Length: 494
Ligand SMILES: Nc1ncnc2c1ncn2[C@@H]1O[C@H](COP(=O)(O)OP(=O)(O)OP(=O)(O)O)[C@@H](O)[C@H]1O
Ligand SMILES: C[C@@](O)(CCOP(=O)(O)O)CC(=O)O
Image (tube, rainbow, N blue to C red; front, side, top):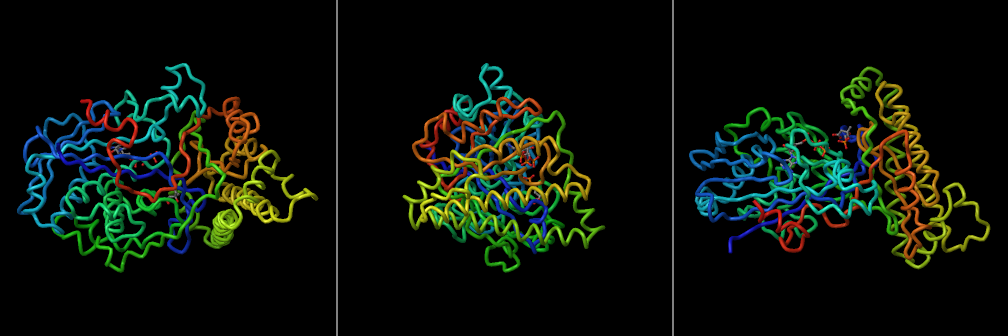
């Protein structure tokens, strides 16, 4: 049987720190999603030496073949018979094979490429809008309906036309592809992607950041790539200067001196983060009829022009974002100290609106810190929304447009909903909520059901749920082809 390597990487939701995270003096809180990208790399029996074939079976016209020359320098050329281009895939192959060749030597790579490689890439259904699929199946827009759509379902469209949901498909794709190739060429050990923090994982991170920047033609904050590599965390960006040299000259320079984890110019910081137990992140794909215009340039321009006002707002948001992350982490500690009382407090407040949480004279004392911490999360997340609205008003961009405010207000006033917001840069396209999810809860008592009810009956906006929850696994990881439902089928079917 041919040797195969499978690596998955999660999507992301930036729950706090949009715009701030672009500046290394500030941080962002990013939650990684259970929805993942999967790259399967297999030694081929048919494709021929020094050829790499990449397939994305969820899309029309999405097979790309490349010839690989290792000497005098690594050069990956698309076949002229390819019917479309994929810059992200092409750059990932070029940079990863070049880096692997520097680490292992051309002769070792030549052996791996002797029969050619077949690569299959798929993303969880959440990465692409499933509205049309639900409509064709005549199913309502609910979590239960989503569970009836087969995994990695074909979109029926070419990649260039698909409606993405904002989970960071390109970052998750690049991370899983470069990590799977590095492992398949033994440029990093497979165990590097099982260990929490390893040199191999950090090498994959630096490479994925580089490829993502090249493909996007700019150096962004990189929180989407770091979530795909490391999972949920509090992210402080790297100084872009580390990549300037390579970005300006992609031809003649070796990659390893810059991309090596021992290069101290990589100064990004990853601090542990997770959402508290017995809560669930709920995500919705929102269709307001208008796409969110590009907001980032305008906000940054305003920040530059009105720096005194912006500095004040940035500092207020720094305090609030930090307090949100720390209070959420504190809740996990309270859970670990006393899981029974924690569960009982969650159960109690899950049937009340936040403003009723702290007004109970009969509150058992052991539950009080849990309840008051959840209330604090509620208050802080509402304050953050207020400051983000202010940022939008001052810079005249729709960071939390009024349509989203109304939807979020309707959700956040439900019993058992802790808080929420518009993720990342904001706009019309999505919302996130943190919802209590107590053990043993009758469906009609469940806060999740209450939120779904709001979403399905909301008429001002077209709201469709995503199935993702938080991924508690550490970012990029090695997978077994047969352990992921539906994966072997999409790899085998041509
Ligand atoms: N399944 C896939 N197979 C191959 N390439 C893909 C796949 N999904 C996405 N891509 C690549 O990623 C590109 C999209 O990147 P872009 O940066 O525009 O999206 P994004 O910002 O990551 O989107 P979102 O956050 O909404 O998922 C596509 O043009 C394609 O090159
Ligand atoms: C505005 C910004 O801070 C967040 C963008 O997030 P998203 O792609 O909208 O999830 C930009 C960035 O950090 O790259």
